[in-house]
Image (cartoon, helix red, strand yellow):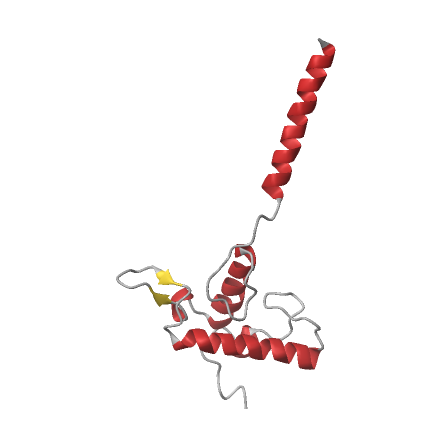
Length: 136
């Protein structure tokens, strides 16, 4: 009887450990469509960090600034390239990554990385367009 109870407890603990590990693992990365600068296997957590902390905070804009609406809907079509601001954002991402690599000698700069020195907010200061007088 004692052995059976120990076996049941052992199995229950094993199930709890396996469930806990499965719940805390990072999970598979999302597969987003039409990513051209960001990694194709970026996690939703990392993507949200970049979009909120870099773009929303750095430029003071919402998602609809770069992302077009779906046809006949109020939902955003994140994969669409219909708005020119999205291509401008991609160019700005390339520019900041290049600046960080060339001038701050970061080997593999990545958007959202805490080692990045120049970010959107460096020039934009929470505005959709940087103050041109400050850049001269």
